[in-house]
Each structure stands twice: as C-alpha cells, then as structure tokens.
Amino acid sequence: MWYNRCGDKMENIKIYQNGMNYQVSILYEDNHIIVCNKPAGILSQGDSTGDANMVDILKEFLKNKYQKPGNVYLGLVHRLDRMTEGVMVFGKTSKASSRLSTIFSQKNDEIIKKYLVIVKGLFPNDCDKKLSHYIKKDEKLVKSFVTTDKSGKLAELEFDVIDHNNKNSLVEVNLLTGRHHQIRVQFSHIGHPVMCDSLYGDLTKGNLCLCAYYLSFIHPVNKKRYEFKVKPVNDNFKLFSLQKIDFSSIIFND
Image (cartoon, rainbow, N blue to C red; front, side, top):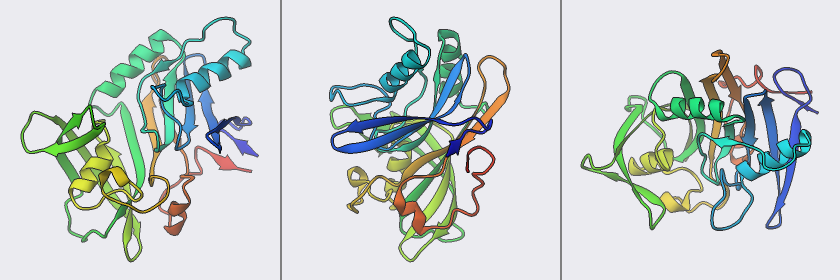
C-alpha cells in the first residue's frame, strides 16, 4: 500500500488509453494546490489528439471527490513532455495558480527542478558539468535546436553523474531554466542524447529515460517550502544504482 509523506493513504487514479494502463498518484493536496506523479505517455494538457491529459484527469478527480457540480477550476502552471514522467503541481484556485506561474517563469531559488536522466555515452571526470546554450523552437516540427546566435532563448542546466555502465550514464540534472525540450536538446547537442529519444538522436527502443523526480517550491499561500520526490518507473533506471538519491523522506512503501 502506498502512502504520501503525511502518512495518509495515497490516492491513485487509473487510466486506460490506447491499450495501455496508466496510474496517476496524488502526492499532496490542500485547499490551494495539488501535486501528482505524472506517468510517461500522458499529456500535461489537452491537444488535437484528444488523448488523456493531466488537466482533465485531475479536474474529473476533484469533481468526483468533492461532488462538485459544474466545471472545476484547475490551473496549469508548468508542463512536462508527454513521454516524461515525474512530479507536477497544479493550482486549485486562480490566486494560487497566478503565484505559482510567476514562480515558475522566473529564474530564482523559489523553485528547484531536478531530473534523473539516462544519456548515451560516458563523461570524463573533468568535463564541464554546466550546459549553457541558446535554443530556438521550430513550431512546425515541434522540435527545438541549439542556435549559434542570441535569437533563441538562454537555456542553462547543471548536472552530476550518479552512475554509469559501459555505454551509458545516469545523470542528475538541476534545471536552471525551463525551455522546450531543454534537457533533450542540450544533451543531444553535446553528443549524449537521452536514451530512447528518437527525436533527438537515439534509436534505442523503449520509453524516454527522463524523470522529473524532484520538485521544490515555495507554497503560494503559506510561503513554506515544499519538496517532493518520486522514483522513476521506467525499467531502464533499474540498470543503474540510485543509492545516492534519497527518496525515503517524501514517499515510502509499506
């Protein structure tokens, strides 16, 4: 049985789509925000495909849980790529959503976003572990590129190598900016594409090896710092040691 960090039984939402079963876990909820673990394969918000998305899933969950008539408000304040799993926070009121949106849009220490990523290849011990590029998005291709001029948006991240095998590396990424496909673009640009990311250069079959495992932010109302961690579900992460990452303080399995 799963519990959230407060010791309450965790609520899980089951979704069936295109022959696949998905589970959305509610990590935390109060009157102002709701935090969940988005599975890979589920959209953050609706698009032209009409496929299941986190906004509609959580709206339906809240509507049924509290027996609310009519439409339920839910504010989308940040996004994860469809094939990225991990922690997301949503606003349950317009006030909370507005404040969270401001936090996510600014480059400061009020929000900390960390990812676990498997990338192709190995890194030398003395390599520069900060990446800084300018990125441009091609709206038609729905793909981003590193550009040599400053017509793009500045994209910065820091990373540490957590573990490696003979061919690939497990890295922890501290995302300093939030650009379209940023982690995927930047690691591909330096010759280390994310494993199973065919869009940016790796043809390994399977789910994208990218997990937004850690999210810390200042609560929009009580101003306290909240932090959440989740373990990657993707089986490829089992090929590496995660002992350096402490997951026990937020979610535990009984």
